[in-house]
Picture 1 (tube, helix red, strand yellow):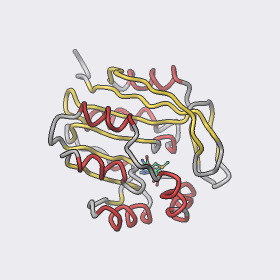
Picture 2 (cartoon, rainbow, N blue to C red):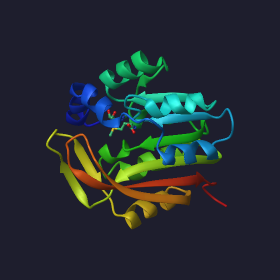
Picture 3 (cartoon, rainbow, N blue to C red):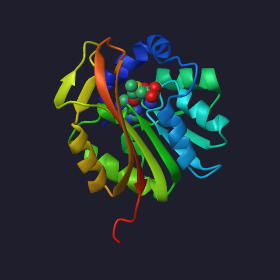
Length: 201
Ligand SMILES: C[S@@+](CC[C@H](N)C(=O)[O-])C[C@H]1O[C@@H](n2cnc3c(N)ncnc32)[C@H](O)[C@@H]1O
């Protein structure tokens, strides 16, 4: 279930988030993701926020399903990009083989650890065979609320990779870095690109 306090924090700060994430060119992880999705493919932007990534994907010829639990983020996404973003949570993703790619950029870090394996399995099921998955997470351990009252679950690099392989993904590419977040702290992050493979070989 979506964490109400986290969603309320985003609902209140859409303008700050837009300022924070304003970029002149797309992040290289997004470019690498787009290059791996089949041309014209259908992509889920899970926890899309302002849907800036969705707009870039659309500009590259992909069809995008942009979803977020925050009504204000969805409103902003549609006002800015006219992209048909919709309100949906991680729990709502349950269509088998619906997408050629799933872009989950710094959204699943708000999932309860007990739900995380279930969400990853559902996302694996939602991809076609050979579909591409991107996940961006903050590195660390344990759980915490930040000063904006957002809930975070942290994983080490190895824990995250174990979760991904456990859900059936083949790891393709790993990128790490450090950046300031909405709460102002500089935190280490990891982005993983992975392929879906059959549940049983
Ligand atoms: C750090 S922002 C990332 C936004 C966007 N992916 C980006 O890269 O800029 C996290 C987003 O996840 C959304 N989110 C948090 N919990 C969610 C849930 N349970 N289901 C769907 N979206 C959720 C928030 O509303 C927020 O827009």
